[in-house]
Image 1 (cartoon, rainbow, N blue to C red):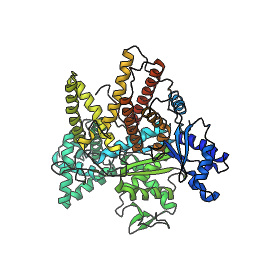
Image 2 (tube, rainbow, N blue to C red; image 1 turned 120 degrees about the horizontal axis):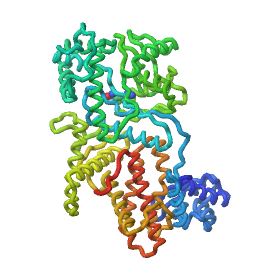
Image 3 (cartoon, protein in one colour; image 1 turned 90 degrees about the vertical axis):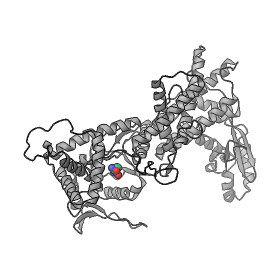
Image 4 (spheres, protein in one colour; image 1 turned 180 degrees about the vertical axis):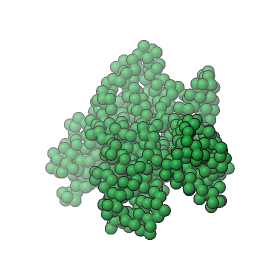
Amino acid sequence: MKTLLSILSEEMGKAFEAAGYDSELGKVGVSNRPDLCEYQCNGAMAGAKKYHKAPLQIATDVAANLESSEIFEKSEAVAPGFLNLNLKGEFVAKILSEMTDDEFFGLERPEPLTMVVDYGGPNVAKPLHVGHLRSAVIGESIKRILRYMGHTVYGDIHMGDWGLQMGLVIYEMSLRMPELPYFDDAFTGEYPAEAPFTVTDLEEIYPAASKKSKEDADYKAKAMEATLKLQEGKRGYRALWERIMDVSIADMKRNYSRLNVDFDLWNGESTVQDLIPGMVKDMKDGGFAYESNGAIVVDVKEETDTKEMPPCIIIKSDGASLYNTTDLATIKDRVAKYNPAKMVYLTDKRQDLYFEQVFRCARKTGLVPADTELVHIGFGTVNGKDGSPYKTRSGGVPRLSDLIDEIEEGMHSKIAENANTKGDNLTEDEINDRARKVGLAAIKYGDLSNQASKDYIFDKDRFISFEGDTGPYILYTIVRIKSILDKHTANGGKAERGVIGAAGSKEEKDLQMLLAGYNATMESAAAELAPHKICGYIYDIANAFNRFYHETQILAEPDEARKQSLISLLVLTGDILETCIDLLGFSAPERM
Ligand code: ARG
């Protein structure tokens, strides 16, 4: 289906043309004076110059051609030359009935492509912290939106599993547990399959090692040596590294599954190490990479640059590869394996310049075909109420799991309290289940409702509130719809998608017009990779629905046909809201 605004603009364009003006002038937008009209067209203002006519005259000419329109109930020319428009109830209802019949509610999906979304980006052996929340939550939603559009999308976690942190952990373990076979150069047997440490040990070992390395140059040198030996393939270190990976990945999976986030590819920096020498050679042979102060670099500056654009360092003077070397090799690997039309990266926006360098380097050196899109979405910081990065009470960096716990606990007491006032007898398991579901909505919506590039304040009390622009408010609205529909079916009625009739009130029409904007919202959320657009959309729908609900008798409606139309409207509203929250990566409980 065409978007509502394009249908309106087309109708308006015809009226302009019939009055002797350019149809392009008929662009219709949502009214910025909802007290006066639903939609508006400002084309007469734009046409005044071209036709040397008063805008009001043009608007009046055009309005005259809309008197018998099947779409506009009102088309009024007002000074100085606006066209104020209202839609016919039957027209809106017809659109909704068409949406109802379509699996994608009238969304036309584009040609399917293959894409990679690179998100998560945790570092092995280090605990997940608050900084990992946004990448996971936004990336998961973008992946789901792109899949919904029909694309084949690979979510790749791109772990940091090859850097100094691995050497630090290995070296520290060699001091603590020197008796392990991993550190015995004479050992030739099979290394044990079980890790000699737990994730809790790991969580203590890494920070301890990191601290020592900052205080003790010799310690750091040893850790760097261990990193190098691991990368060169030293048998014992490789085996220990695998155990660290097992333990760490199991912990990541636990954390990400609490966020309802999962990945198709558990690749990391280590995955592409073998590709690096060949890639560097190609870059040299192609004349792109050259030696500068002992390092190998590729210039990525362009003449039009207004900001500093340092060259991409591919190999350091000590022969080591870097973070970006791995990213470039990963691009090469993905092109070979999937040839994606688009690769989307989610990281903190402090990596903006970094990704610009990497993308330019990848293009210049021919790692990607010219039409492959490389997109970096740099997100803002999660702040505390004081406006600076969110900290624990003792001033540390909060663990991701603690953050989730905090929300779930807050949600738990709210749910228990609510159930108590309503006299619902819930088991502890039921309370926990609801608290988890609603808590997930609280944390994800709290994040996703902000434009990604902006910082936001992690405000637990606001996030878990059942009122306002929050996840729980959206779920509450869905649950309300479900419970009306349940009552209806309990009374022997049918709660299915069906024909929707013209609205009986302004509130109902407002809801209908919003629902009719579904395809346009999805198109722009997908094109701009912007989940916050979906949040804004469902918040508007939830508000419109609740206003409608307060004004309307639904189950008590005596006219059967009208009642069925109201039920169909509820079903469609519920289906759309549930589809949207699924794209945001959470779901609604049956009750709350
Ligand atoms: N591990 C990286 C970090 O902690 C994030 C990885 C992001 N993805 C990428 N392809 N570079 O900063």
